[in-house]
Amino acid sequence: MVRGRYVSVEPALFPACAEDLFSVLGGAANDDLWAYLPIGPFENAAQLAETMAFVCEQQNWVTHLFRDAATAAPVGQPQSQLLGQPLGQPLGMASYMRIRPEAGSAEVGCVVFSKKLQRTPAATETMYLMAKHLFDDLGYRRYEWKCHNANEASKRAAIRLGFTFEGVFRQDQVVKGENRDTAWYSIIDTEWPRVKAGFEAWLAPENFDGAGAQRRSLLEIRDAL
Image 1 (cartoon, rainbow, N blue to C red):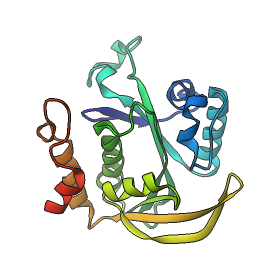
Image 2: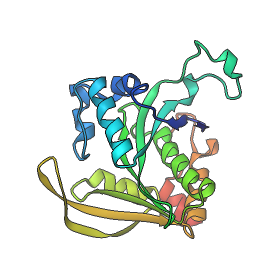
Image 3: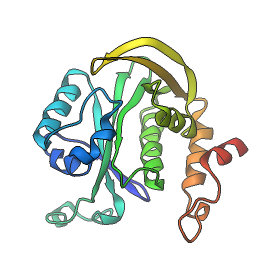
């Protein structure tokens, strides 16, 4: 587990975490979260667990669960004292995909933020922590972001987070019976120090006012570096 200021990021173990994830990502009110993804929506936690277990095993997804760090047990608390302690409210998940250790490359995908997590500093922190693990801990050279070319929100997010647009693969896939043109983005290792510094400056407490509003945007901070 990695603990940030706002969130903790931990391996998502299925079926154990399915109920937690379904509680914030499932149900008709959340069907829109899955609109552009190759999986979902799900009718129940068991269906979510079955699908995620399949893709993790058969397609080599490495999925992580996001929790609210403010509601979790304190960092460093002995394991013997954690029984009965809150794990932290679930907030969403994302997966490392298309993992190619021989090339030092992986994609972040199937990013599903609960409505509580969307458009918050915590959401940005999840992506920072996952990128940091890939580059700083694993020593990878390339980090990819791909999305349906019609998904304007995902394309804006990629640019905001520091990914560089590489092009559109036309008629790349058929997803849920419909064509998908796929927009490709990446961060490479030589770009990571600047992207990382931008994340850390944006997430710093002094970048937010008393009402929690950002003083400078992530793009502004990174452009100034």
